[in-house]
Amino acid sequence: MEFHLLDRGRIHADLNFALDAEVAAVYSDQSPALQYGEFAVWNLLIDHPDATVLWDTGSHPEAADGHWPAPLYEAFAHVDAAERDLETALGEVGYDIGDVDVVVQSHLHLDHAGGLYHFEGTDVPVYVHRRELEHAYLSAKTAGGGDAYLAADFDRDLNWQLVSDERQLLPGIDLLHLPGHTPGLLGAEIDREEKRLLIAGDEAFLAENYEEGRSMGSSLVYDSRAWERSRRKLKERERRTDATVLYGHDPEQFERLHGQL
Image 1 (cartoon, one colour):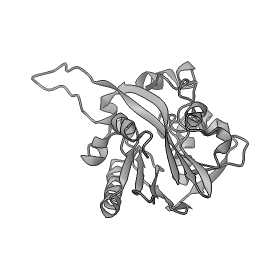
Image 2 (tube, one colour; image 1 turned 90 degrees about the vertical axis):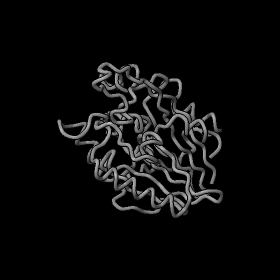
Image 3 (cartoon, one colour; image 1 turned 45 degrees about the vertical axis):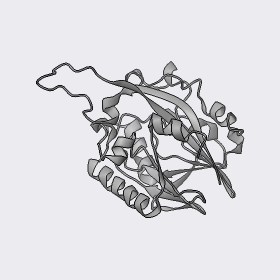
Image 4 (spheres, one colour; image 1 turned 60 degrees about the vertical axis):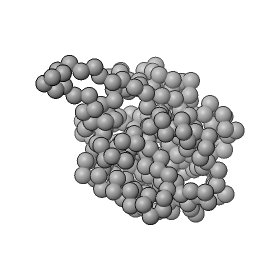
């Protein structure tokens, strides 16, 4: 297998979203300065002997031009979504949309599912957990659920392949159910010759979430108990296999691994 970590740009947001109460008022400092930073957005292309797999499809290129609702864009500004669109990122590693045989959607938040329109009306299978698809429609179509789902991203003619239990996607690639951030978050365990890879994705926005057990902000955690169980599951697999764990939006890890997976 060959791996290409695709650079889909940066989201600008308050650090408190990723690290709960990272900046908080205290008696001696009742007006602390907020920390506003950048978070990496990536997709992963896996060139497997049996199929070319795209992990997530990233933000819609028109995120800044009205595709994302203004309040969401204000909170999570993907400032270079148009510049770092999926076609550009694939082209930088020598691929194009037509080379993709399989898509895996870790979940259907707007910064992960915005490129699904490329596969509308095709027979390319799009794998997603059943609970995630149900929750996405509930969220986008009713007053229930979460805020980060856009029907325009996923309510399309797609070749959905629903995942209900943990399963093998292809030889050497096992899909993992990691509920917490969302009900149907998918990760993966990938058996590589050099070093096993665990895709944690948005189970951990940053290294501190995974390594120190620091919770993300409440708006980014659907179920805190499930989140901790999923973290322990990954920790146990990492302990047994000495795997590299790939986080969801950690800019330092992205820069370290980009071009080296």
